[in-house]
Length: 259
Ligand SMILES: NC(=O)c1ccc[n+]([C@@H]2O[C@H](COP(=O)([O-])OP(=O)(O)OC[C@H]3O[C@@H](n4cnc5c(N)ncnc54)[C@H](OP(=O)(O)O)[C@@H]3O)[C@@H](O)[C@H]2O)c1
Picture (spheres, helix red, strand yellow):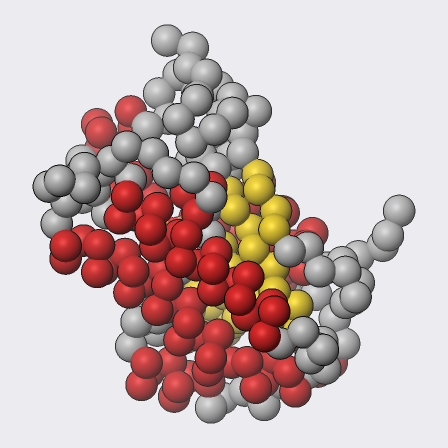
């Protein structure tokens, strides 16, 4: 069995976007435990500061930096802080609404594209020089199974996640030969506190229905575990794409519910 790789001094920093909740927060905790100095970013400063304190108190190392991934000037300013970094986890994102194509709000589509796709593009472009300079960089893109198949009512989110998948695949082709891996993690149903609440604009009943009767949806920790596993493989091992779903979910539209 291959042992997890320990980050070198030049590649010890891991930037995680969307670290204020769910998969991003869990990933920050696990990468910190794996030996990375984690830099937590999200818009809600209080939450990332509290998490950074928690990680420090556990004997690991973390810093918090409030950042909106859609704000390119702010992202460029953020990137000036780093000469080298080892890992960028592009996790910030999410879904808005489940309207059909016929009636979906174009503004929701724009917001999803801006956050999931342009946000990933912004961070990746801004930090690629520092990732390359480390001599052992890794870009992680947290897409979704929505990036690999569609479902009714999902087109705006599905389109954005397909675009994230294309970004990851194309970047891997374009930078081959440089010391940077590009890893895409595509989770299925993950029960996080906020994902469905955001999608249904705070409607708790509709959000809860998403997971109704599903024995064990994935947790944020399950996904963080796959991200950390892929990142800690030896540098020459590039996990191109890892699709992970709960056992109860066979496809985006085929879910076993015990009701
Ligand atoms: N939950 C699922 O079923 C599932 C399945 C597959 C893929 N995913 C993907 O996994 C990622 C994380 O999902 P999650 O379930 O952990 O959702 P979540 O708990 O809602 O987390 C979303 C994170 O993104 C951040 N964010 C949103 N817009 C942002 C912006 N403009 N700038 C910076 N940060 C922003 C949020 O922080 P702030 O609000 O503090 O900025 C939050 O930390 C997303 O890309 C999502 O599409 C989720």
